[in-house]
Length: 510
Image 1 (cartoon, rainbow, N blue to C red):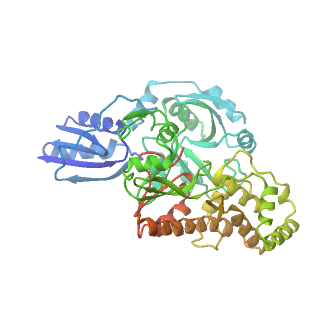
Image 2: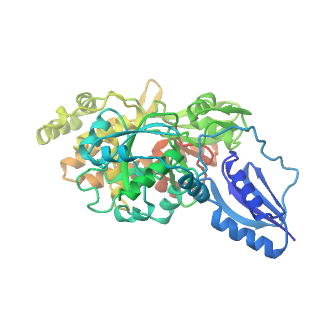
């Protein structure tokens, strides 16, 4: 009998196909595996008993992938479809199946005693991995802050997955993503009091991953044998940044990163790209690249590219024959509390009075320094954070994600026209938050309300643009949409009337 099994697979990289082909050989079954854009087919010509045995093997040995969608049996397929060509491009990805991990452990014996002694003394071990050098240390607030002050992001390496639920509020989806063959970084939330001394992170969240190459597998095993279930690390000199991922009910989303994804052959551009930055820049930016990926260049399409760190966040419209037109731009503001207060005072006399009264009630705010090397939304959120006596945009967002609120209050999201360009008026956002703060509204409510109000801002202007252009497709991109509050609320509202497009094969941002 013939059976055709379809696996939705949202990348054109071929490593998953090769894993399936190895399992077909192992099962000694009469079958082939074919990969097309968007899916993989397993075609079997076998007895029912052998097919059943093969699927039992698949269930046992086929790893999870961040690119997998639904899987199901189909009656037939279009045989004229062109299979993806194998250009022999090697990704920086170790295919750590259970068998591969077992083989690594059995065939290698490396002495990590010096490294372990070093970190147990509260020091830092400089460790070489397949992807470059990492600085590894036990959870320690002073060491963590020292690295962060030097500009490093601190992440968590998990050595024993069976201990995860001891310190994290973990769900099955988080666990599946952590254990997927791509070994991405997943943002996990600490349980109450498990990060009480801020030894792991300055907030209640941290990006975590499990070992992703031979060297780290062996080191993690040695740590586990010493009862060390987690270590912190900073990338020192690595070749590629790891993939950060999140998810919605409908799909997994790559936030950013290159490891395991690039180098990559793009079948639309018909060329190889070595990094997400190279890919997006050559395609004219993230929004333009997604239009190409989804064949929407010849269709009126609204694009919302909101990035934490890019200088060109905007709401735009793609009009066939006319190209992309920015409708609303996000300003790149001067990173200064003093300057921000002066600009708010210039709005009107009520705002001037607010600044005077706010400065009297919270005199230390004016002395606060704001990071000078940020752009776009990160600068705006930093300003909002500082008037609430919160350190930065990262802490601001993580407070929002920690809440159980379902609705908040209205933060002013208005436009200001300068030299013919419509900008989101950041002054009104900060002024609105300050006014609520003066009325003793708590920080958690204000921070949650920022993302909720930003969602309403997006929805209102998408609707206005759509009325003028008859657009039915809306693209969300940029790493601001990694925020689950912003993404879920915006998607829930707009999906009633529009086709929402989120990138599946490429990251939200770079």
